[in-house]
Length: 306
Length: 228
Image 1 (tube, rainbow over the protein chains, first blue to last red):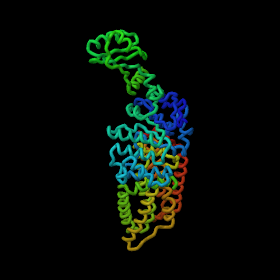
Image 2 (image 1 turned 90 degrees about the vertical axis):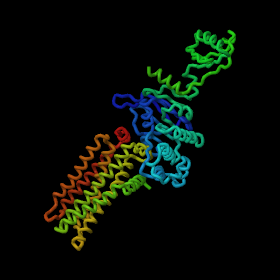
Image 3 (image 1 turned 135 degrees about the vertical axis):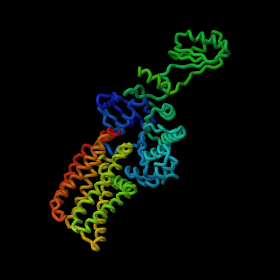
Image 4 (image 1 turned 180 degrees about the vertical axis):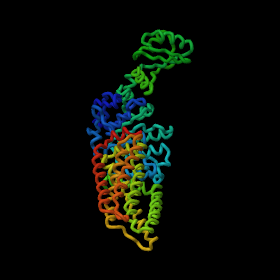
C-alpha cells in the first residue's frame, strides 16, 4: 500500500518553475531516499507534502489525505526539518513535553523518558538544549518527531552539518527505527552514502524533475555501464591483454594500472574470459565492479545537466 | 488541555522566566514611583496615572514579548516544525497571543497596584481610583493589550522579515496614538471622563474585531515563504 502519493506535482514561484510535474509513490514501511543537488527542489517537495506550501498544480497525498487541510492526518506523521525546531532556552524534557501535549500523547512522562533513553539523552533531560552539540540536538529532534509514535517520519537532511561520528549515530538511529518499528521514512538528502546505506528505494530529482526512481540495485543495473576489472598473470600477459581488449568494439574505455586492467563496456558481455584464454592470456582474477550510488548519481545528473 | 492553552502555557512560562520580565518589573516600580511623586503634589492625578501608565507598561511589555514569541520563532525557522503539528493555524496564533497578553496584563495590573501603594505610602493614606478606572483596568486594558498583541503577532507571521521591523513600529505608534488620543478626552482636574474610557474601549474593540478579521489571511505558505 502506498502511503505517500505524489501526482503531477508542479510548483512555481513567480515565473520560476521549481517542480515540474513530478510523480512518485512511497510504500508503507519503506525507507525512501529523495536525492538531488542543492536547489533541485527537494525541500520544496517535502514542504508541499507536509502542507507548508501549496502546489501550483497536482497533489501530494499522505495516507490519502492532504496534510495542508487535515489536522488529524498531521498527527500521524513526525518531522525533523533542516532546522531542528527545538527551543534552546528550554530543557530537553520540556521540548518533548510541549510536543507530547500538542500531539495528545497519553502517559507523557513514560513516553518521553523512553525516547530520551532511546536517543541516549536521558541523563541530560533537564539540561537546556542551547548547551547541546549539533548531534545531540539532532537526536533530540528525532525523539521529538517520534513522541506520538507516528506512522511516517519525514527527515530533511538529517545528517547535514554533523561530524562523522554524529552522522553515524543518526544513521544507526534511522536504521533501527526502520528495522525495529517498521516505520515509513521519507529521507531528503544529498548525502549519497547515507541514502545508499539506509534506503530501500530512491528518487533522484534534478532541475525540478524526477530523473529516476528505483531501488539502488536496479539503478546500478539500469544506469551504469558495466565495469570489469581484469588482473593478468604477469606484466607480459597484461600488455597483450590490454592490446586485445582495447581493440574490441564493445569496449567503451580501457585503462591499465599495474597488472590490473579496468574495462568500461558499452554493454554486458560474458565472453571476455573466453576471448582472452583463446589468445593464451593467463588471467589471475576477473570481477565485475559494483558502482556506487555516487557514480550513478553523477552520471545521471551529469547527463541531464548537459 | 486545549491546544491553544498548551501553547499559551509554554509561552507564559518562557516569558516569566526571561530576563525581560525582571527588567519590566523594575520599570513598573520606577514609573510607579515617579507617578507617585506627582500624585503626592496633586492626589487627583492618580486617575490619569492609573489610566495611562498601566496600559503603556502592558503594551510595551506585550510588544517585547510578541517579538520573542512570534518573530524569533519565525526567524529561527522553529515555527516550521510547529506548523507541522496537528494544530490549526488560528489556534497557534491565538495560543501565542494569549501567551504574550496574559503576562503583559499582569505587568499592567502590577503597575496600577504599585501606583496606588507607593502614592499611599507618600500620602500616608491610600486613594483608590474612580469606578471608571476599575472598569478600565478590568475590561478595557486587557482587551487593548490582547488586540495589540494579536495585531503585531499577525503582522510578524504574515510580513517578510525586512518589512516586519518598520511595520511593527508603525503599529506600535498607532497603538500609542490611540491611547494618548483618548487621554486628550480627559476632563479637568485629572478626572477621567466616561467618554475617554469609552473611546479607548471602542478603539480596543475595533482593533480586536479587525485583528480577528485579518486572521483569515493567515496561511502556512505565507509564513514559510516570508522567512529569511
